[in-house]
Image (cartoon, rainbow, N blue to C red; front, side, top):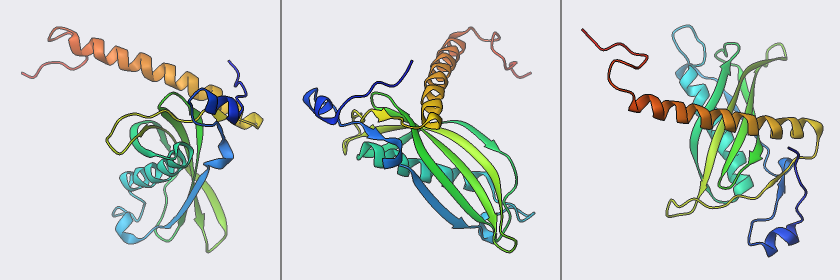
Amino acid sequence: MTATHVTPAASAAQGKPAPRSVSESQSEMTEVILPNDTNTLGNLLGGRLMHFIDLVGAMAAYRHSRTHVVTAAMDHIDFIQPVHVGDLLILKSSVNRAFSTSMEVGVKVWAENTMVGEYRHVASAYLVFVAIDQHGNRVRVPALLPETPDEHRRYEGAQRRREHREAESERRQVAKLAPAGHGSVRPGR
């Protein structure tokens, strides 16, 4: 499946928001890691990193949809290397694909040791955000127009991940309906 080009005028005529490019919503934030952000070893807490990832991901989704967004899923996260007290954490996000009312956002995270000028890739994640109005109702989001080969690759990958999420959701629903004792967790003694 490839992206089709829809002109803003044609989109407006159909009552849909005008398509947007990836570059229109890319976001970046930087945080200095302080002792309050770390565990007893001086490494950034995983939950704190997830919080930062959620924030920068929401920024890209908000910029793309131009409405309120809520986090629907953190589809995947890789903690690659520890982040230490004093490091600068650099987070970059971009919308990988827009669906009807949801968007997949990719986030990549680097740590910079400013004392030696070293950058390390420390985490990556995929999140799903849903666009809503002020009453909590879902609203349509603009189509995404990938332009570069990398943007097209991420666009296609987002569709595969969505199909996987939907299959996994269905599998979990079936597992909930299974009779007692037939799940993956044994009943207690």
